[in-house]
Image (cartoon, rainbow, N blue to C red):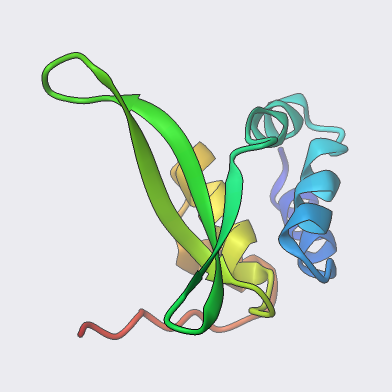
Length: 116
């Protein structure tokens, strides 16, 4: 994928209001590798209320050190957060792209999460 095509795709996905809408944009991408990666995530997101926040998690099965399948849960974003968080996570998780680069493609400034 050319850089200008990537920028267009990221900006398009960031115009979505919700994670499911952004995922649909990525699923319908003309670039087969992106569309397949997005399709593979279908049904893997769960919503949970934690500490008064509606959090969206990615839930998948992964093999642990003993070779057994176990559930792996990763917090992606909260309901109402800017969908750029999901888009950046998608390209990082699926294509090892730095989140900073995805934010830059979207014309946004990436801020490193603060350590607690």
